[in-house]
Image (cartoon, rainbow, N blue to C red; front, side):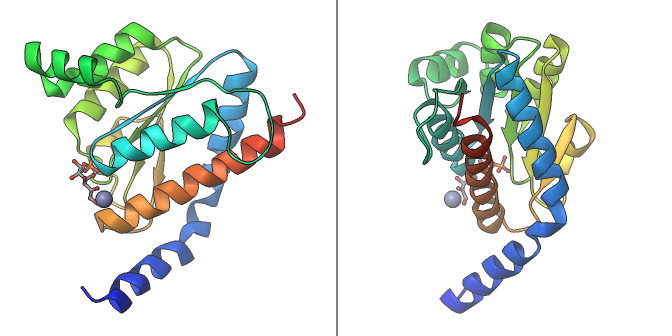
Length: 187
Ligand SMILES: O=C(CO)[C@@H](O)[C@H](O)[C@H](O)[C@H](O)COP(=O)(O)O
Ligand SMILES: [Zn+2]
C-alpha cells in the first residue's frame, strides 16, 4: 500500500469517528463514575493492543496533560513473569483471565482491545470479569468479531484494517484522557 493510500484510509476512518461518539462519551461517563466509586480500569490486548493497553494505563496513573490526582489503571499486558509463567504452566488463552481472577473487583471497568474482536485470551478474560461483576467494554473494528456478542459495551472503530483500527483506538484513548483531565483535574 502506498503512503497516500494508507493516509487516505486513515483519514476515512477518522472522518467516521463521529459515528461512534455517543459510545465514547458513555464510556467517559462510566470511567469517571468508576474512579469516583473507588474502582479501577483494567486494560488488555495483544500485540499493538498490548502496547495501547500499557500506554493508556500510564496516562491515567501518571498524567496526560493536566495536573490531577493519580488515577488507578492497570495493563494486564506488562508483567513478563506473570505472562510467561501462566502461558508456560497453563495456557496463553487464560493469561488475562488469571489476572482478572486475582485483581478484578465488582466496581472495576475492564477494557479489552481486539481489532478482530476474536482474540481468545481477551474473550475469556471478559467473561471472567463479567462473572466478577465488573463492567466490560470491548474496543474492536467495525465487524466486532466474537466480542460483539459477549462484551457489555462495544466501541467499534470504523475500519476493517488492523492498523487503521489501532490508530482509531489510540485516538479514542487519548480523548478519554482529555475528558478525565477536564472532569477530574480539580479533585
Ligand atoms: O500491531 C499489530 C498490527 O498492526 C499486531 O501486533 C497485532 O496487534 C497482533 O497481530 C494481534 O495479535 C492482533 O490481535 P487482535 O487485535 O485481532 O486481537
Ligand atoms: Zn501495529
